Image 1 (cartoon, rainbow, N blue to C red):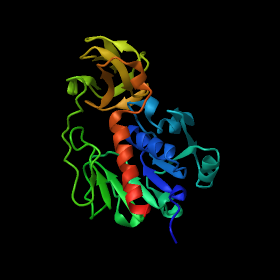
Image 2 (cartoon, rainbow, N blue to C red; image 1 turned 45 degrees about the horizontal axis):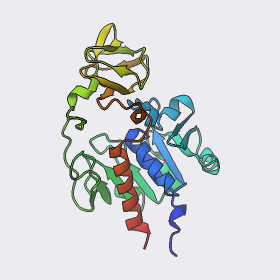
Image 3 (cartoon, rainbow, N blue to C red; image 1 turned 45 degrees about the vertical axis):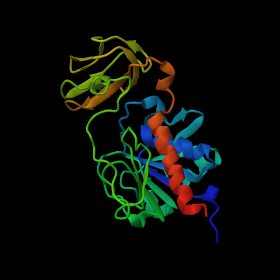
Image 4 (cartoon, rainbow, N blue to C red; image 1 turned 180 degrees about the vertical axis):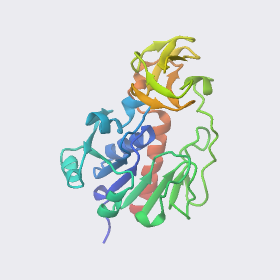
Length: 269
């Protein structure tokens, strides 16, 4: 019997920025049976566009799509009935075994495979480095900015981790705010605040976190979080457009389109 693709159940591991972008793309394409799995205390930089914030706040809306924290498997259907995407704390992916989705997407962006395998669903998709299409996932997707961003890989691996942030207006590592030491991060600046080079954006145990370029604070982690030395705390967008803080990036949108391509390739025939 042919599968009605709008009824496909889709599990997404992770609910960070990239996972959120692809979840929104699928949801807006009328895939309404999506659920997302997160760790107990997720840390996101681009919090305004990361569904994992629902774990902390109970609910978040990104580009008109609502994600809600759920506590039990039974609540997933309730969230679907209210036209929302459920996000559940499930670090060991137990709900995948219980629900048996048609599609599993590893969107954790850990730069390595944390245990995703072909047996989890009829279609298993891995995003970025750490996956080999045909071996531990059915399809992989290139996440490195550049010519091949979003390329669907049916055999082989995405490009290895470069360790460098993507280029925006000629800036790469300068965009990223990193912790000067281990300790507790605090900042009085909200996402969307304009900053100048050498401004103090926050502190870690009294040591300043300093902006290296002019722009807008596009993302920063939550206050009072314990951080390690050199951890990414935030990022500055040199384009200076505050709307970019609350909308899905071109990278996440491209990857979402590639996931859509992968699902249609498998099920729409």
